[in-house]
Image (cartoon, rainbow, N blue to C red; front, top):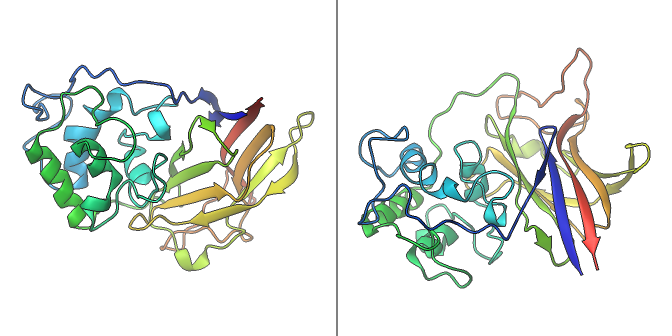
Length: 280
């Protein structure tokens, strides 16, 4: 038995393909495995900060595969989704290891993958050429320094900046994991089990009929993200993840801004909607 997730994000249907393979053609790297600079929006040398690593490595090299609904393991490394998808988030292949563990590059799955000693799967970039040691050391240094995102202005009101299905296309037990990224740090003191709600929808009316128990957490070192994990296996059906209308919701930024829907009256905010199909 296998479970297939078909996601609807930002009002558009998106199919995730875990079987997507990387081209391995070395795009974005020179013959020594160093990021090619001077094009693709990169300026100056690679430095140990997130913005530089995003523009020199993740965007020109990794997004050849890790972008859109077909991103392997649901890991999107485009500029909108990369930080929320990486820092403090468990890897799908080895859930006991975080993709990026702030302050600990050796126990960060991204380092294990680009150095080629991860317990599961191939070295990245898939098929090579691989990143040179100087580039890897720079990414290591960023993680050692705390994997900070850098300065960024908060939006008013609080806004969702990314939503990613951080689960495999084929799920052995029907559990799903989602990551929502926000425009500012979340007020973690206000988060509780009612901050978000996962609901199964009636196939005829499209209205919610069953709430689904979820576990929520802010990934370590990534206070602008919220991780939502289903507590048990899901059955066939369509589901939606919503933030209840204020003042019911406890989801707000550290500035006190709340996530609110459009219109003069408080309304629930739809974060994501997806179909789950069980193939026997």
